[in-house]
Length: 246
Image (tube, rainbow, N blue to C red; front, side):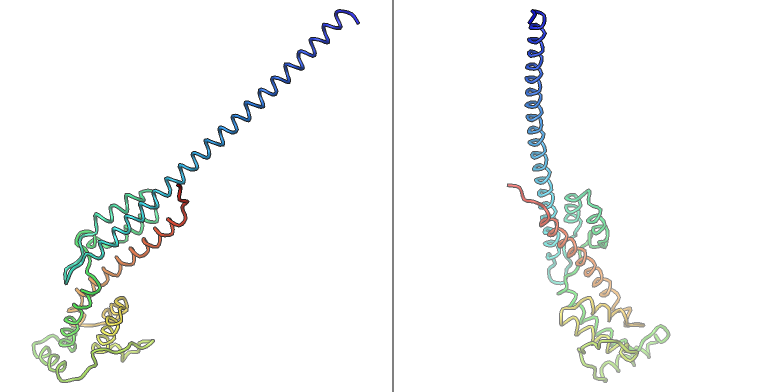
C-alpha cells in the first residue's frame, strides 16, 4: 500500500471521527436545549397557573365583600352604597366580559344609595297594604273626596283575610285589590319577595300608586340580589376551575 493511499485512509478516518464527535456534540447541545425549553415552559405554566389562581381568589374576595355590603342595612335604612364594593369586583376581573356585563346590570341607585333588606321591605309592606286597602275603590276615574270616604269605609266594614295562599293560576276574579294584597302578604310571610312584588304589580288605580315606591324598592333589591348571586356562583366556579399552586 502506497504512502498516498495510507494518507488518504488516515484522512478519511480522521474526518469520520471528527464528524462523529461533531454529531455527538450537536446531539448533546440539542438535548440540553430541549431540557432548557422544557424547564422554561414548566416555569411559565407554573407562573400562568399561579396568576390565574391569584385572580380567581381576588375575584372571590371582592364578591364576598360585595355580599357583605348587602348585609349592612339596619332597621328601615338601606345598605351602604355598593359602588366601592362593585369597583373592587370590576378591578379584579377587568378583562372579563361576563362579569363586566353582570356588574353593568346593577341598578344605578344601588351603587349610589344602597338597597333595602328583605326584612325592611317586609316590615314596610304592611303599612303599604293597609293604605292600599283604604283606597281600593279609587281608580283613575273615581277620585273625588266622596269616593275616598266610601273606599275607606269599605276597607273597615268588609272582612278580607290578611293572607291567602295564591292559586296556581290567576283568574280575573283574583285580580281584586284585596285578594292581590292578601296573596302578596302570604308570599312576604313565606320569604318570596319576588312573587309578592309580582302580585303588587297587578294593582290598579290609587292602590297601585300608593304601592309604587315599595314596588320600586323591592325590584331594586331583587335585581341587585340576583346579580350578586350570579357573581357568587361564577366566582366559586372560577375558583374551582383553577389549579392551586403550592
